[in-house]
Length: 323
Ligand code: BTN
Image (cartoon, rainbow, N blue to C red; front, side, top):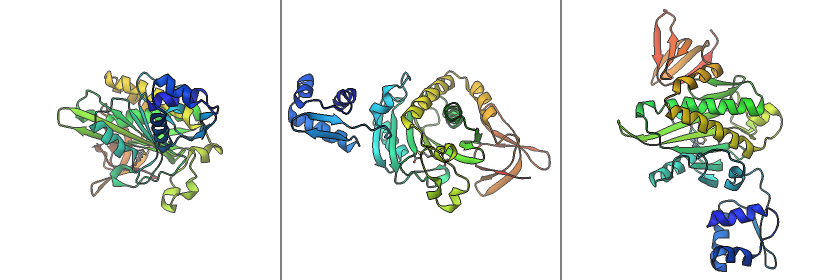
């Protein structure tokens, strides 16, 4: 009901719709209508009330409101269900709860800011207003061992979106950092709920530093980070960029489900800034150093160590270093 009311308000954006018109259309009482309006306001919508004229939704172009995101969305199922928040602890946490309660594949959680955004390896992820903080709930029928591949699939979808829409020199640092030049602009955190045999659900969390001022980041992070605003020297309209990303993501994810991961890897290789670089990978108290010479069919990084031997790296924190 709340979404149907929102649709009417959105159609008449910035113009009033009378209480009578809405209540008679949905056969609800004025009290019920007021309750729905209050819930929409709690969700972050700016809805004005005039006793004589009724309700109107104010223009909200730079917020990630579901109606803004769904208006021109071209996907078949990704983003058809959106849970929007002004602030949450972490969109991945909210998505997990929704997934436990049975949320459908393609459901999205998006927030203007996160108070406890999480990065990989238990790191904090700074998430002020202006960034895209979003999680997608997925239920692929795959062998759980393939779940980490989804991080690479998502990386390709982000990279192609930023390259095509913003014309930037976008690259991927293994396994999941999206870079502009040498600086990180996006991180991906994939979390799975699975047994050894079956994936119950996967949460893909995507954090893009969009209209964020990196000068406000702590000095340690500032050096290696950038935002689209910093790179383009202007703010970009986020709803459009998210719509394009969701479509790219859906296409890549469908390919992944059709066992076309090798095709996606070809694109990953084209975006890769890691292959051909000298790297250090830190994994559980051990550091391996060498030249990244390739990525195998399962998404595992291959390093050539100084003694000429090859080492497969399944996971770890990868740093590009000068030889
Ligand atoms: C990383 O590079 O370390 C991964 C960062 C992932 C951040 C995103 S923002 C949306 C989602 N919610 C979270 O708490 N984390 C992910």
